[in-house]
Structure formats: C-alpha cells, structure tokens
Length: 174
Image (cartoon, rainbow, N blue to C red; front, top):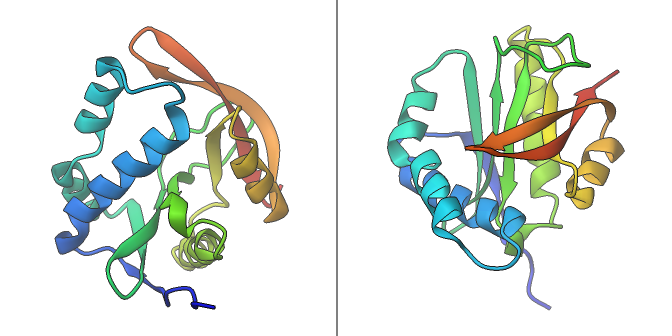
C-alpha cells in the first residue's frame, strides 16, 4: 500500500504566492460550486485569489500564513490574521481567514497540523483565541472545527455582489 506523502509545515514565502493562488481557486471552486462554473463565480475567484494578493498578505505583520508542503508542492495552508472586527458572537479580533487543503489530500491530518500550528503561533504572538466563519452548508468543516475546540457563537453572511450566503461563526476555546 502506498504511503501518504510526507508534508512539512513552514511559513509561506514570496515564491509560494502563485501556488497559493492556484490552490485557493481549486479548493474554493470545489467547496462552493455545485452545478457548474458561472462567469459570476469565475470572475470572483480569479479576482480574489491572485499571487499579488498573497504577496500583500505576506507583507502584513497582522497576518500569519503557514503552508503544508509535501515532496512536490504545497497541499494546504492556513491564514490567521489579527486586528479584525469580529462578527456578532465573538469578542476576539483574531480570525482564521482560511484553512484550505487540496481535496485529494484531505483526511490525512494536514488540516489539523495546520490548525494546531497556527493556534500555537497565534498564542506566541499574544493574539486572542481566533474565530472563523464557515459556510453553513459545509457540515464536514463545521464538524472538523467542533472536534478541535471550536463552538458555535453566531451567524453572519458571506456577500458576493447582491447574493448572501449564511455562515456559522465558530469561536476557539469558548
């Protein structure tokens, strides 16, 4: 039986930006597009997930971006950021903005490794316990976070133009 690729966690580098953009598009489309890719969603993904945007994130001291790299490339990442206005239900200003693992690498413990590393590094920076927003229909992600210390504290909406998608707000350690 083949073994899973060995992944190493590390801070993201400027040379990772295009890989992070491509991984983000893959995971976002896989997670949220159910019946075909419309121009509306394609335009959003291509504008939102760019190498330039990741380069700006890396230059921001209120951002932490960790990657999981296997022997051939990046298979996941987590983005933690401080100084964010919390939604209803959370008093924390620290957000887990993104935790993405390529679909073919999910279920191998990569997401949990990234989550634990980000929580440790956030604590080392004296950042508050984080909150996150997750699509209310993403029951797998909600269950994952609840298994690892997050509890529901409210709801909010993810807005794309004039369309709103219900998201659950989960808080770590509450």
